[in-house]
Length: 473
Image 1: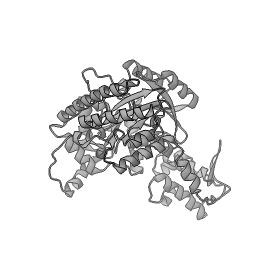
Image 2: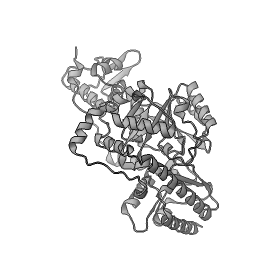
Image 3: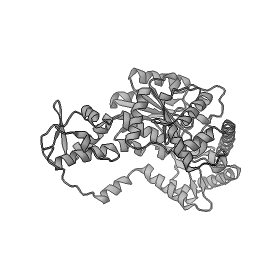
Image 4: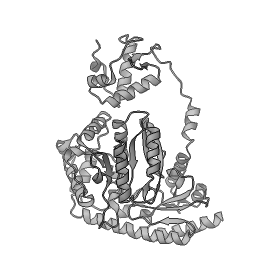
């Protein structure tokens, strides 16, 4: 009998270690052609890992021809004991990476921004400009302080930070979580990765909005998850389209951005929120609520309940501080039931994706600043002023376009079903702007980050847009 754990190499990610272990056992003759492997659940228990980790390793070994699954019988070492070495066709591989139009366009925009031409106007990037990032005074810290702080680090994150996040959520979002319901991460992208990796298996289907920031996201490809899109309007995601996807593709997870949706800036109505929650309850499908912009609503006198408030058990809530404190803060969190958090915590530690203790300590100090809430309120006031000024400018320079004035967040969304503008035209005019194709649309649309526009930049943008429109007439 094989003592599986003693052969598991010290390697991360763990699924790669499991693959290496099984191939090594075959090389050593301890596993032979036709030998049956333990069931995935049993092997996961023997190796002290998450079952999804074993499943991913098995899926890749099956694809490589090392093992095979027999329906009703189990998993066996393949007749072809070792997979034949396959050379990568680099030409085909690299060409395939360039086939996505949105990936191509992102690359062009990033290259323009990296060149930093003198007259560049960047309303594509999502980073808060330095002038708007709240300013904090920090005490002098030593390396010993960070080592000492590790004593307060729990499996779910730095305890003082968990407390600070909870207090901020209670004050601004009327949300309250117990310690067992929160997990600190390195941002929303990592939070979503942990959810996809920890709760789904390769081949599972998820539903997202269209247009959506997550269109063409590499997260889905990295986790082997299939993604399907349902259209949205000013009221939120189409219930008819969403239910059709759920039924046709057996969707296992729905990912929504109900507050100041990226890219449209729309807010899902309370009626639509209740309907979406009811639909997912009926089909027993969890919802991931991406609320990264939820802190930046301009009018908080009548807040609409979050999906998490409407359905605490079935909604997984994710957010971050990157839109308030800058992308370099790299701190986010997941709020879910204790059972889900326990599962995600295991995956996070298995994959060594624990956020830096230094980042957690610094963010905790910033949130403890007496002026933190005041500066957050001031930031929202400045963003509202910039949104209104940008809206008025766009109505002047693009009178035939539909311009949506958002009630929070960073973005203004403009659309025109018949006006054809090429990205190259914007790049030639040294204007970095996000076209609708980045978010899955075929009609002409532009996402403009008004957060980056002070009064001087706004005048320059108006002149640049006017020149572009004139050049395309």
